[in-house]
Image 1 (cartoon, chains in turn blue, green):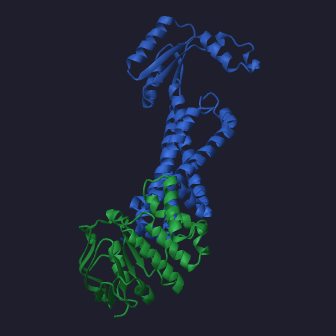
Image 2 (cartoon, rainbow over the protein chains, first blue to last red; image 1 turned 120 degrees about the vertical axis):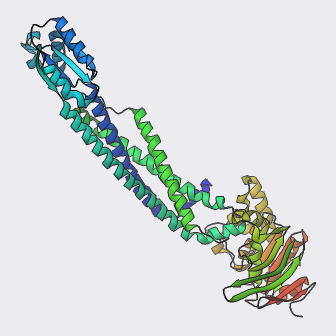
Image 3 (cartoon, rainbow over the protein chains, first blue to last red; image 1 turned 90 degrees about the vertical axis):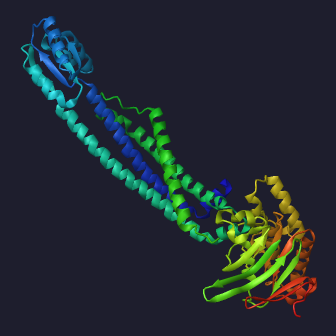
Length: 289
Length: 225
């Protein structure tokens, strides 16, 4: 069977190359859309996991007041987590953040920085309400919250997913049609040979299986190529993207994650290839009895 | 072995075969004779299951051929070896590969395939040509390749459609001798031909057709009455 497959592929090498290039390009774009989607999701998760509201506290407040405030916001049921950051903690964070820029560290002491309460909401939509509660508290100096960032990002991600999905469907349809048309042409050209094989005693499976195998091969081989190209692109872009997305732990991309992508795209490629060959065989292989 | 009972085959208005009834016994050698368009090839194609009769029944080994479902027809065809008038050899395969095609339908290892192909190559005298492609062969060699392909899987019935049509008299005679040899080993042979000398050489059963009708069915017959 594999010998027949090899023969069929090399019988029209330019056709085979055309299928592989076309399907590889389409699957490459599907891969890219998926990676962008996964990356955006990771970015969103990062922002969601960060404190979404910071209540800067007035100087000289007592720890009991902070505990009371903490208990109050937690009792609303809308707050997932509330962490107190003292002036000393704030200085530590500041120093850590600017350790490479000593000029910014000069003259800075804990007194310059306010103590704060960092809050993560259960739901982004209730962030505004939480901020209003905090603002009314006498020990709170100011409230800073990033509702817009997260909700904008979330909305962008939603749109991106929809666009990616539509494009992926469109590209997969393109793969399917490419495989279908090329295999259909090959079947039509080999119709007489297939008729003869039937008369010699070949079963339907014997005639169809090399066609299915050829479709699966095109899908699988193209998937591996597209994945390889994707991986190379990621490796190439990692230094740049790491700089742009400083602090967001996405890069370097985990090899395990990439292997999962390989598994997924291989399955997708094989499935599309098989489907294309299945349709081609039933559409063009209507040999006589 | 094969029984035709009032079999007719029509293609639209044209009647290719009309109420044909005959029986071919196991191990028999039967010539189908008659002019072009008499219905010889139609009979062969009805036996292979390629055509379905318009009316009547064709029975082989207690099975009605027309009732064999399309998906199981291959099992019947594996019992038949067919030699086509236009050879139907695969141009991109060597003589050896062409002959081994029917063996590929069975679960045989490479050694077994080689052994069987070598055996028939010897029988048809094509050992020296086994690595050549059909385009490199003469007419008689092509026909012998077809014969080898038809018998390599040891079929019960051998159907030959004008196997000597493109051959010179000497090669045609050699071919018929080969058929006779195969028949003597127990294979039923049904050969469609309008080669008078070939029929007269063997003096075996002759079914003569004319315009789709059986006009003569004679044991140890000759081409002409």
